[in-house]
Length: 308
Ligand SMILES: Cc1cc2nc3c(=O)[nH]c(=O)nc-3n(C[C@H](O)[C@H](O)[C@H](O)COP(=O)(O)OP(=O)(O)OC[C@H]3O[C@@H](n4cnc5c(N)ncnc54)[C@H](O)[C@@H]3O)c2cc1C
Image 1: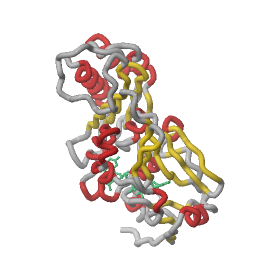
Image 2: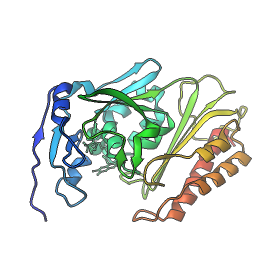
Image 3: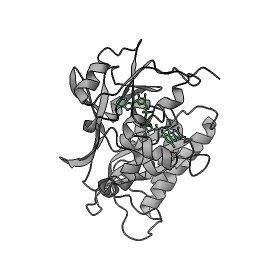
Image 4: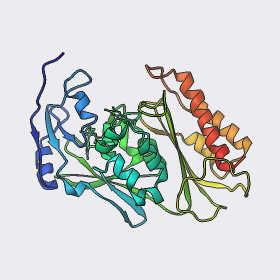
């Protein structure tokens, strides 16, 4: 059992104060932000990964809180917890796939403390909200003493557990576009239904150009078996736990683009996905299992959407 460590921690009361603490953070001597602490605290003894050397506690930064609708997007403060996402009427109305993902994370205690900003910055390939953020084309508003900028989800995860954030930057908010009839589905496959790290996570999102203008609500899981099958546009398929970072699978998206969710298209998309991803064997699963299950889960999503 290693000796307990107590890295120095500062608790700024405002964003400028937090930026000042982070100003001399570098890759060699990082200042580690702590939000809910559900990932950071696991590292603190040094038994798993590099322990933090210096820390900045974000909990007093009101600027990083809140859920709002602004200019065609839902804007989530980086400190938004999973419990807040689950309880938010805005999220339930506009981002049901994110609500579904939040409900699969850990148990109540983790959902009460864990934040969406922490999930994103932690950059685990198994992070459950990350494929949803990719499929919904989210953007990260980040800031430091040097100013603010936006990073698209597509450009945010750059390597295994690495993001495009500079050492002195904080995620401030996550902006998620809404509207225009977008539908999104989420599926997590783990060892069990709760308290499991994912073996595969999928988020599939599309606009049905022939369907009624919707609010982006998740379509019913049970096949409806009635109604016309529409044509899909702007299809985005994102996966977790099948690469060193969460990924978009563009070859499979191309199969689904301008197509209808028919049995033939489902077969073709599942085959494309099995060929496109290159998962690894690890303690949670084999590469082959992940490939087969990802393809089957996608097939199932398309079947449910097509109602057949
Ligand atoms: C028992 C248990 C079960 C779990 N189950 C799941 C699960 O099912 N699915 C899942 O995806 N995860 C799971 N996790 C992991 C964890 O709970 C999530 O990743 C959570 O969202 C992390 O948020 P946090 O606020 O606790 O982050 P913290 O631990 O505070 O921080 C995580 C990382 O993000 C950085 N960071 C935090 N906020 C910011 C910010 N605003 N700007 C820049 N950097 C920031 C920190 O420096 C750190 O590197 C689990 C963890 C535990 C302990």
